[in-house]
Image 1 (cartoon, rainbow, N blue to C red):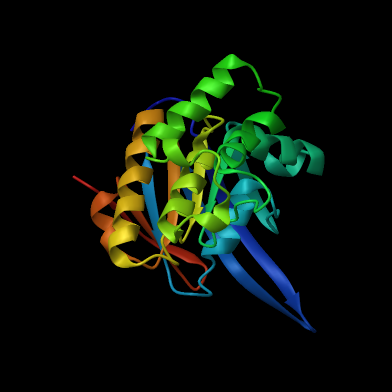
Image 2 (cartoon, one colour):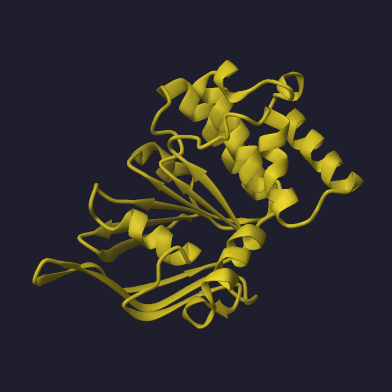
Length: 232
């Protein structure tokens, strides 16, 4: 394992929510370290705490106990505005429902993370064009999302998530709305680009077929990180 500073560190992280007079613990004493260049798969049933874990890692939510660090910065110590800036600059997101902006073209959707971080020069435009070609949509740059197939929309989402060269990529069921063949093509693209960019990727999925692609496989069961396999 690399001796470099981890991209993600969770120490004794728990998360609880009030439900009426009761308190429900969704995550319990989670320990997790993720390094640059790792392609990590997180398995677990619905309700096991996977989405909650992503929300804590991204700073959308904060832990009830324990510490979460991203790129060495402890999220609890940051203001909400600082956490928003951290997400914009260091984290890329891919969602099951694509979440493309319908009033923006393909090229504009991909360019958005760069614009949000003030990168609008020639290098940024060249990067967007390069990503368009890489995901096979160079000829659809001016198209709007509603003119694309589901697989094409998710390819745009992959390119958008990586446009600003994030240190961390979080994907929540990225192939959940795609048929098996299209999903495999999107995963090929996602894995290839992540490794090329040397980003750290954490992919939440129900799909056991992703296990063979992963450097590490994590499993959440009822809020506990109970399994960790390292590929030989």
